Amino acid sequence: MRLRNPGGIGATGSFDLLMPPTCWLTGIPLAQHDVAVSSSIRDELAVQIQAPYCHRCGANRTRGAGHCPLCPQRRLGTAEIIRVGEYTHPLKELIAKFKFGRHWALAPLLATQMLEAWERSGQPRVDVLVPIPLHWWREFGRGFNQSRELARFLARRMGKPFADGLVRRKRTPRQSLAGSANQRRENLRGAIASKPLDWSGQHVWLVDDVCTTGSTLHAAAMAFAALPQEYQPERISAMVLAVTGMERNSSTS
Ligand SMILES: [Zn+2]
Image 1 (cartoon, rainbow, N blue to C red):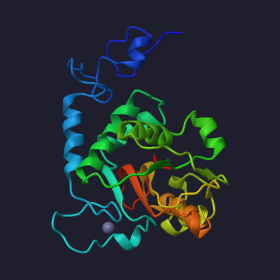
Image 2: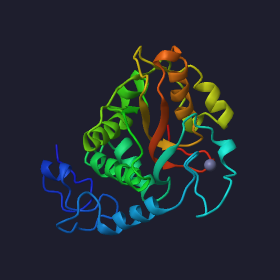
Image 3: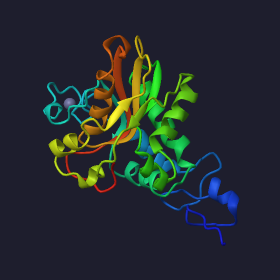
Protein backbone atom coordinates (compact mmCIF):
# COMPACT_ATOMS: atom_id res chain seq x y z
CA MET A 1 0.00 0.00 0.00
CA ARG A 2 1.35 3.41 -0.89
CA LEU A 3 1.74 5.68 2.14
CA ARG A 4 0.49 9.20 1.84
CA ASN A 5 1.73 12.18 3.80
CA PRO A 6 -1.28 13.67 5.61
CA GLY A 7 0.52 17.00 5.60
CA GLY A 8 0.08 17.01 1.86
CA ILE A 9 3.63 17.51 0.56
CA GLY A 10 6.79 15.49 0.52
CA ALA A 11 5.47 12.00 1.20
CA THR A 12 8.31 9.57 1.41
CA GLY A 13 7.24 6.76 3.73
CA SER A 14 5.81 5.69 7.07
CA PHE A 15 8.08 8.04 9.04
CA ASP A 16 6.28 10.93 7.42
CA LEU A 17 3.00 9.69 8.87
CA LEU A 18 4.40 10.34 12.35
CA MET A 19 6.54 13.37 11.63
CA PRO A 20 5.19 15.14 8.57
CA PRO A 21 7.65 17.63 7.13
CA THR A 22 4.81 19.93 6.14
CA CYS A 23 2.19 21.78 8.15
CA TRP A 24 -0.94 19.69 8.79
CA LEU A 25 -3.15 22.58 7.83
CA THR A 26 -1.34 24.79 5.37
CA GLY A 27 0.83 22.17 3.66
CA ILE A 28 3.83 24.49 3.67
CA PRO A 29 7.20 23.03 4.67
CA LEU A 30 7.86 23.19 8.39
CA ALA A 31 10.81 25.07 9.80
CA GLN A 32 13.28 22.94 11.70
CA HIS A 33 11.90 23.92 15.13
CA ASP A 34 8.24 23.50 14.13
CA VAL A 35 6.27 20.38 15.05
CA ALA A 36 3.06 19.37 13.28
CA VAL A 37 1.97 22.90 12.30
CA SER A 38 3.69 25.98 10.99
CA SER A 39 4.58 28.97 13.13
CA SER A 40 1.74 30.96 11.56
CA ILE A 41 -0.81 28.43 12.83
CA ARG A 42 0.85 28.45 16.26
CA ASP A 43 0.60 32.24 16.26
CA GLU A 44 -3.12 31.98 15.53
CA LEU A 45 -3.54 29.50 18.39
CA ALA A 46 -1.65 31.85 20.71
CA VAL A 47 -4.04 34.66 19.82
CA GLN A 48 -7.00 32.42 20.64
CA ILE A 49 -5.55 31.44 24.02
CA GLN A 50 -5.10 35.10 24.92
CA ALA A 51 -8.67 36.07 24.00
CA PRO A 52 -10.89 36.87 27.01
CA TYR A 53 -13.75 34.51 27.75
CA CYS A 54 -16.28 33.71 30.44
CA HIS A 55 -14.84 31.10 32.81
CA ARG A 56 -18.34 29.93 33.78
CA CYS A 57 -19.64 29.05 30.31
CA GLY A 58 -16.63 29.46 27.99
CA ALA A 59 -18.25 32.08 25.74
CA ASN A 60 -16.22 34.87 24.20
CA ARG A 61 -16.53 38.15 25.98
CA THR A 62 -15.13 41.63 25.86
CA ARG A 63 -12.29 42.23 28.25
CA GLY A 64 -13.59 43.90 31.38
CA ALA A 65 -17.24 43.22 30.56
CA GLY A 66 -19.52 42.51 33.49
CA HIS A 67 -22.35 40.01 33.51
CA CYS A 68 -22.13 37.27 30.83
CA PRO A 69 -25.46 37.02 28.98
CA LEU A 70 -24.70 33.53 27.66
CA CYS A 71 -24.25 31.76 31.00
CA PRO A 72 -27.96 30.93 31.36
CA GLN A 73 -27.93 29.28 27.91
CA ARG A 74 -24.93 27.07 28.59
CA ARG A 75 -25.21 25.50 32.03
CA LEU A 76 -22.23 23.22 32.38
CA GLY A 77 -22.74 21.95 35.92
CA THR A 78 -19.07 22.73 36.58
CA ALA A 79 -17.48 25.35 38.77
CA GLU A 80 -15.43 26.75 35.88
CA ILE A 81 -14.19 26.02 32.38
CA ILE A 82 -10.81 26.54 30.75
CA ARG A 83 -10.66 26.54 26.97
CA VAL A 84 -8.08 27.10 24.27
CA GLY A 85 -10.37 29.04 21.98
CA GLU A 86 -13.47 29.18 19.86
CA TYR A 87 -14.44 26.36 17.51
CA THR A 88 -13.13 28.22 14.48
CA HIS A 89 -10.01 28.16 12.31
CA PRO A 90 -7.48 26.76 13.05
CA LEU A 91 -8.78 24.78 16.04
CA LYS A 92 -11.78 23.47 14.13
CA GLU A 93 -9.66 21.93 11.39
CA LEU A 94 -7.06 20.58 13.82
CA ILE A 95 -9.73 18.90 15.95
CA ALA A 96 -11.37 17.38 12.87
CA LYS A 97 -8.06 15.92 11.71
CA PHE A 98 -7.31 14.59 15.17
CA LYS A 99 -10.77 13.22 15.89
CA PHE A 100 -12.00 11.92 12.56
CA GLY A 101 -8.73 11.61 10.65
CA ARG A 102 -7.04 9.67 13.46
CA HIS A 103 -3.93 11.81 13.16
CA TRP A 104 -2.27 10.86 16.40
CA ALA A 105 0.60 13.28 15.98
CA LEU A 106 -1.82 16.11 16.77
CA ALA A 107 -2.59 14.88 20.32
CA PRO A 108 0.54 16.38 21.93
CA LEU A 109 0.10 19.64 20.02
CA LEU A 110 -3.55 20.04 21.05
CA ALA A 111 -2.98 18.96 24.65
CA THR A 112 -0.09 21.42 24.90
CA GLN A 113 -2.51 24.17 23.91
CA MET A 114 -4.79 23.10 26.77
CA LEU A 115 -1.84 23.15 29.14
CA GLU A 116 -1.00 26.69 28.06
CA ALA A 117 -4.62 27.75 28.57
CA TRP A 118 -4.51 26.28 32.10
CA GLU A 119 -1.23 28.09 32.85
CA ARG A 120 -2.70 31.33 31.55
CA SER A 121 -5.67 30.85 33.89
CA GLY A 122 -3.33 30.91 36.87
CA GLN A 123 -2.77 27.16 37.14
CA PRO A 124 -5.79 26.38 39.33
CA ARG A 125 -5.53 23.29 41.50
CA VAL A 126 -5.83 19.97 39.69
CA ASP A 127 -6.15 16.70 41.59
CA VAL A 128 -7.27 14.35 38.84
CA LEU A 129 -8.07 14.54 35.12
CA VAL A 130 -11.12 12.62 33.91
CA PRO A 131 -11.95 12.26 30.19
CA ILE A 132 -15.50 12.43 28.90
CA PRO A 133 -16.24 8.83 27.91
CA LEU A 134 -17.52 7.60 24.57
CA HIS A 135 -20.01 4.78 24.30
CA TRP A 136 -18.02 1.61 23.64
CA TRP A 137 -19.61 1.16 20.24
CA ARG A 138 -18.67 4.67 19.10
CA GLU A 139 -15.16 4.26 20.45
CA PHE A 140 -14.89 0.95 18.62
CA GLY A 141 -15.89 2.68 15.39
CA ARG A 142 -13.59 5.65 15.87
CA GLY A 143 -10.70 3.56 17.14
CA PHE A 144 -9.99 5.76 20.14
CA ASN A 145 -11.46 8.29 22.52
CA GLN A 146 -9.97 11.68 21.68
CA SER A 147 -10.77 13.06 25.15
CA ARG A 148 -8.88 10.21 26.81
CA GLU A 149 -5.81 10.90 24.69
CA LEU A 150 -5.91 14.58 25.64
CA ALA A 151 -6.44 13.83 29.34
CA ARG A 152 -3.69 11.24 29.38
CA PHE A 153 -1.22 13.65 27.83
CA LEU A 154 -2.25 16.49 30.16
CA ALA A 155 -1.88 14.26 33.22
CA ARG A 156 1.61 13.31 32.16
CA ARG A 157 2.65 16.92 31.56
CA MET A 158 1.08 18.15 34.82
CA GLY A 159 2.33 15.22 36.88
CA LYS A 160 -1.25 14.59 38.03
CA PRO A 161 -3.32 11.40 38.09
CA PHE A 162 -5.49 10.40 35.16
CA ALA A 163 -8.68 8.47 35.91
CA ASP A 164 -10.97 6.82 33.37
CA GLY A 165 -13.67 7.10 36.01
CA LEU A 166 -16.77 7.78 33.93
CA VAL A 167 -18.69 5.43 31.63
CA ARG A 168 -21.35 5.88 28.97
CA ARG A 169 -24.30 3.74 29.95
CA LYS A 170 -26.27 4.23 26.79
CA ARG A 171 -25.65 5.16 23.21
CA THR A 172 -26.97 8.60 22.43
CA PRO A 173 -27.46 10.39 19.12
CA ARG A 174 -24.51 12.43 17.94
CA GLN A 175 -24.84 15.81 19.57
CA SER A 176 -24.69 17.46 16.17
CA LEU A 177 -27.90 15.66 15.26
CA ALA A 178 -29.64 16.10 18.56
CA GLY A 179 -31.28 19.49 18.01
CA SER A 180 -31.78 22.10 20.69
CA ALA A 181 -29.90 22.43 23.94
CA ASN A 182 -32.91 21.07 25.81
CA GLN A 183 -33.10 18.05 23.50
CA ARG A 184 -29.39 17.41 23.92
CA ARG A 185 -29.68 17.53 27.68
CA GLU A 186 -32.68 15.20 27.57
CA ASN A 187 -30.81 12.75 25.33
CA LEU A 188 -27.93 12.65 27.78
CA ARG A 189 -29.99 12.29 30.95
CA GLY A 190 -28.50 9.34 32.83
CA ALA A 191 -26.21 8.49 29.90
CA ILE A 192 -23.00 9.01 31.88
CA ALA A 193 -22.23 7.39 35.24
CA SER A 194 -19.30 7.42 37.61
CA LYS A 195 -17.58 4.18 38.42
CA PRO A 196 -17.97 3.32 42.12
CA LEU A 197 -14.96 5.37 43.20
CA ASP A 198 -14.32 7.66 46.13
CA TRP A 199 -13.73 11.14 44.71
CA SER A 200 -14.03 12.91 48.05
CA GLY A 201 -11.70 15.87 48.57
CA GLN A 202 -10.71 15.85 44.89
CA HIS A 203 -10.78 18.74 42.46
CA VAL A 204 -11.81 16.84 39.35
CA TRP A 205 -11.16 18.27 35.87
CA LEU A 206 -13.31 16.88 33.10
CA VAL A 207 -11.49 16.84 29.76
CA ASP A 208 -13.24 17.06 26.41
CA ASP A 209 -12.43 18.26 22.92
CA VAL A 210 -15.40 20.49 22.08
CA CYS A 211 -18.14 22.06 24.18
CA THR A 212 -21.26 23.06 22.29
CA THR A 213 -24.26 23.60 24.53
CA GLY A 214 -22.46 22.11 27.52
CA SER A 215 -24.93 19.24 27.82
CA THR A 216 -22.20 16.58 27.80
CA LEU A 217 -20.19 18.29 30.52
CA HIS A 218 -23.41 18.77 32.46
CA ALA A 219 -24.25 15.07 32.21
CA ALA A 220 -20.76 14.17 33.42
CA ALA A 221 -21.03 16.55 36.36
CA MET A 222 -24.41 15.06 37.24
CA ALA A 223 -22.84 11.60 37.21
CA PHE A 224 -20.74 12.63 40.20
CA ALA A 225 -23.76 14.19 41.87
CA ALA A 226 -25.51 10.81 41.68
CA LEU A 227 -22.88 9.22 43.93
CA PRO A 228 -23.38 8.99 47.69
CA GLN A 229 -22.49 12.39 49.08
CA GLU A 230 -19.42 11.13 50.94
CA TYR A 231 -17.89 9.98 47.62
CA GLN A 232 -18.59 13.12 45.60
CA PRO A 233 -15.72 15.39 44.46
CA GLU A 234 -15.01 18.61 46.30
CA ARG A 235 -15.11 20.55 43.04
CA ILE A 236 -15.70 19.76 39.35
CA SER A 237 -14.23 21.85 36.55
CA ALA A 238 -13.77 21.41 32.83
CA MET A 239 -10.93 21.82 30.37
CA VAL A 240 -11.69 21.77 26.65
CA LEU A 241 -10.03 22.61 23.40
CA ALA A 242 -12.83 24.64 21.89
CA VAL A 243 -16.20 26.15 22.67
CA THR A 244 -18.73 26.76 19.93
CA GLY A 245 -21.42 29.32 19.61
CA MET A 246 -24.92 28.08 20.30
CA GLU A 247 -25.45 27.11 16.68
CA ARG A 248 -25.53 23.47 15.65
CA ASN A 249 -22.26 22.14 14.39
CA SER A 250 -21.64 19.04 12.36
CA SER A 251 -18.25 18.09 13.80
CA THR A 252 -18.97 17.95 17.51
CA SER A 253 -20.05 15.13 19.79
ZN1 LIG B 1 -20.81 32.97 30.59
